[in-house]
Image (tube, rainbow over all chains, first blue to last red; front, side):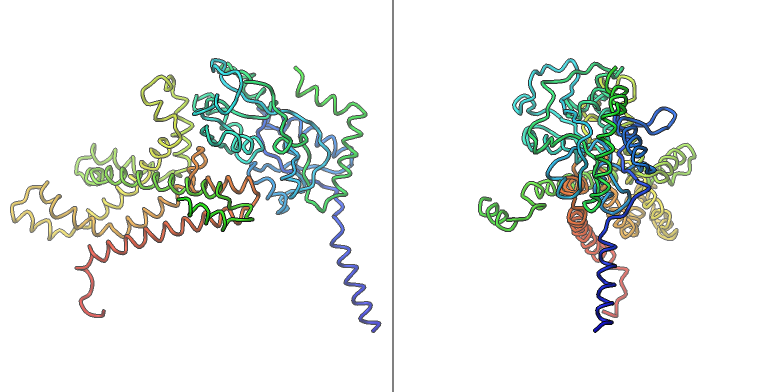
Length: 254
Length: 244
């Protein structure tokens, strides 16, 4: 009887040990590059951007070392779940659909999405009637893809790209009439482009919440609650001491 | 149509991933893949026959360019060829103002061009090998009957070469079907494109890609069956008489 008790106690102890989340001193981030100004490479090949700098600052605050692992967007959540990395910090919008699969930190930035088109396009408001028959570019698997597929999928042709870069290239090649993108990304790649003139069509878009969620967050595996909490605390500290503002200024104000 | 839709809705009740909408994407993907593969094989075949004959020419200036073409297209990955033809072509100065742009603008035609050039290169080599393997006796017999070179080619060499090439060509058709899976990198919604869409939207890699794999498998079996049938009919004279 006593032996049985010891064995079962041991079993409980092992079960408790594995159920407890790992204590990280090295965090690997999955990131989809390039996605200016959020994450991209400098001409020298160095990885940088708002997400990268903020992520590194948070890691420093917590006292862990960070590693960035590149991963194409459409496999980024499966990559997290299959432990290729421990967290995703790659301009990922927090929404309910994703919450079913991953655990999110607090939002660290809340940028809108927007329609971008060549300046010569005669279009005031992107309604389904106005976009009838046009070719819309989106990045595959993004919330913009879901939004455009559900609202405009019946009237317009939708071209889906693996990277934002391929999409911008096709926009410049005049294969696309209009694209739907995160505003900061569209601004840096299209509005600041030297090739052609582009404009934002209509208002920037943050509604409805079922598509656009609650801003960008860091995604963790659901069991890593403790780690998410450490990052939340670090974010709060960085916002308080001005580090966050300093990084934000560098990437979003001219 | 209506009873079918109702039946489908009943079957899919409660299934999150395979909704009528996603099945519609898979169906569209099946149509796109079939069109791409069928058209590229057809045009590739039409191109390959004269090229295979030229490839066997005695004259260097006829033989070498064809050899160079098949060498380049068989020596580089199809994915790279597709990238060059789809993304590379926009860097040609003033291409948007030419009459070719409406064709090159769509993703379908650059993909079709890449696939056609690729399969034509492989098919040329397959036919060239089959033509070269024609036994000398047959050609000499044709000459003895007074057939011209052209007539010998048409009546003797090509028919027997086609038969010899059939098993190898059947492989090429299946390879082409499988290679077409890269079409989604240029935004085409082929079967793989549909699977990638479902995967990215529902984070369901197994369901999305296994379903796509099953569709490819069905297509492959259909092609295999067709070539078995053709071989049985066209190569009947090579079968041993007894032993059935």
